[in-house]
Length: 194
Image 1: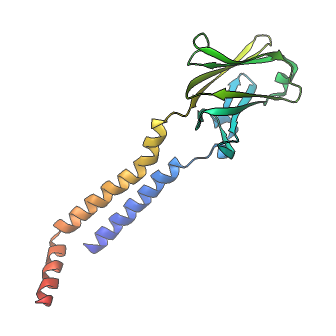
Image 2 (image 1 turned 30 degrees about the vertical axis):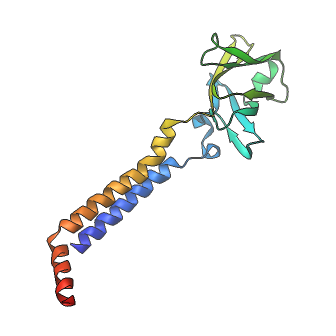
């Protein structure tokens, strides 16, 4: 019985660690093609990074920005051909391009160095970033930002491992307490005391 409980405990521990480590993913350790901050149209790729030095000097974000306030948006033109065409950018408060208030509107310009940056004050809520490259045909990239909002999917993913671990521990504890060997062991300990 003790051997079975030990095996079940080890199995539960391995399962919990596998679930928990799968939820720990950093932005910087993702392949370029799988990075949620990358946008691709054909062979053309761009990358968005958002910075808030007043909140976190080292942090950079993509879609979920932790605090409202001064935000630096940096667009990297990954594909060199984008550096030879005018690129414009709009930041709109809301979920769609035709809805909401325009926070930032940068007219199309050439960016030979491949970096577009702007600074905006973002309040709590949803934002839509539209980047337009005036090529033939025109290219449109879109980003949706969430500023100072709870991401319930991440909360769920982060809590699933501990919840499964607690459930497995509870089941193992219940089976141990209900086992005949455990009751016999408790009875023998009581009889030795008396």
